[in-house]
Amino acid sequence: MRESRRFAKAGAHAGPELSRFSTSDAPAHRRVALWNEHASRAMTGLRVEPPRLTEFDAAYEAAQMQEVGFVEARSTRAHVTHLPVCGADPAYLIHLQRTGTSLNRQAGREVTLRPGDFVLCDLAQPCALDLSDDNTMLVLRIPAASLRRRMANPELFTNLHMRGDRGASSLASRFAALLWDSREAEAGPTATAKAAEALCDLISAAFQEARPQAEGSSAQVLHRLRIQRHIEARLFDPDLTPASLAAELRISPRYLHRIFSAEEESIGKLILRKRLEACRAALADPRQAPKTISTIAYERGFNNTTYFARAFRDRYGVSPSEHRRSPAAPS
Image (tube, rainbow, N blue to C red):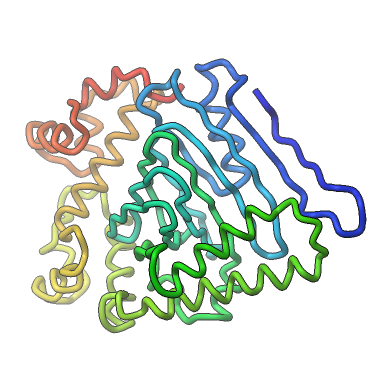
């Protein structure tokens, strides 16, 4: 394997210090574990699950340009889970698609990114991505304080689809790609700092232009985020239903459904998907091997194994037992 390396050009006007890592020279059975370890250090805590463990391959190049961190990651097909950061939100990520496509899931939204498109990822919340084959994504890490100086409540825009072919989002996307592609230019620290500031300004301007897409009033959006966090906290409770959630939050079921009416998923489908994702991860976890499939389903909020098995197959195309036997299960 090619270990992480850091290097910088000599001279007063050297470009940013770069680091690189590739799994290409690693044994096939070790690539996923090595990628999880190195990519988590470069971006944020993550777990990757490819369809076939021995066919996975990935590489990244990373650099810090003043307050903005850049990581360009290339990989074969995989399911990726970003692990939420506990405590205060230190940063947000921008997922900017460069080649291939990715399905991004966070905050109750599912967004398919094509080249040039991007979304905002809130590190305080869980996030999942499905990457297509030959996928390249540019990930920007921006301090939360930097975004908050430029726009109120960045969390309102979590996983909002920002198109790379129109408006201010197109300008922000192209500038981010240009800045990254020029990473080895001999720019001084003052020019690099100004370019990073301009990038943050463009990104915040793009989100401000997209504010009408943020589903109505700020109060309603914040209420939706509060509901989603409540779902995360009670996800494995079998008594968690839209009706019980509305009663606990002291709102009407009608208002609860109205809050999520603009989303691609209803509140019931959101709860089901999150439970299925938790079961899928547990079935692939060797530490859960002593437990039966029924036990794993019951522990994660299902009270009917027939319904669980049918819902699992409908979503993933295989039965729970077939997924558990899959060679893609991480070691």
